[in-house]
Length: 323
Image (tube, rainbow, N blue to C red; front, side, top):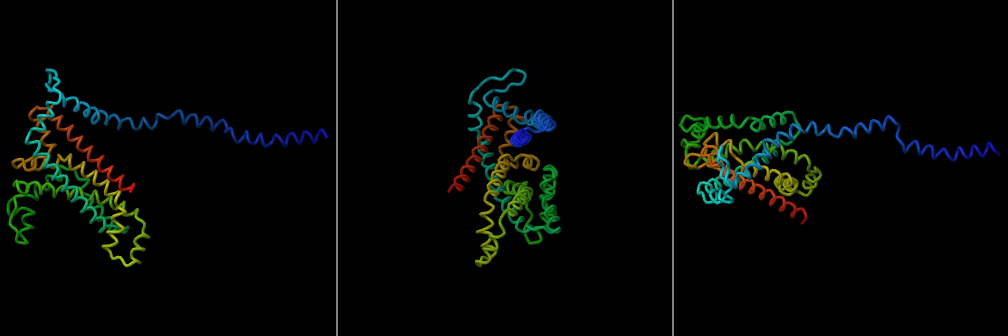
């Protein structure tokens, strides 16, 4: 009886011992977990160089620009607080109003042009064959080429004489030579065309990724219902790409409002201010004329306009999703 009672007690304690064994990990695993939790700083150590660069070259200058926008900046003499005077000066300047109009025209034209070109290229180059991969890579080259190289290339193509590159091409169809960036009437459209040529392939790659996420069953169902290719694009492709278009619109609009390099390298705001945009005007006010306070006020206004545009697009998109 004593032996059976001892066996019963051992059998009753066995599940508890097993449960205790499962609940408490072995010492080696505990030490390994402790070491992992104690090394939480390793990801931050890898991120630290990028965070420092962002802090030094982006966030600190932004704070300083906001501070200088309410001051009369006097190097080596000390700044004077002037309140909203710099904002009044920049808003009452006719050159700033003209530059704002040019910026909006250029931003709208490049945004619409890049979206259309990117969408057409994505439809033409959608697929998985090697030939299409090579063509997509070739089409994407303008995006990775430095803007200085692109601007100089287009300056050569825009050579205004009759034997210029583009003038030779349009001369084949009987059109006369154009002055392109040397004429106030065509300079803005010439800069816009170059921006569309460079930005369209970027939109193409994002749209291609969006096309890959559309359910192929929807195309098959539309085909069974008798829809042609155009109807499939309108009723299947475009609704499926609505989130992609929203992201691309925001990115293109921000890129259009902050356009500087191509205008500065190709025309520097000329001729006669025909291509003067906000960024080139602020550059001239701040670094060429020494009006750092006024230029900072214009930069803050440009930042607020970009922020408002982004928030408006986000609100409109969210309301459409909720509806």
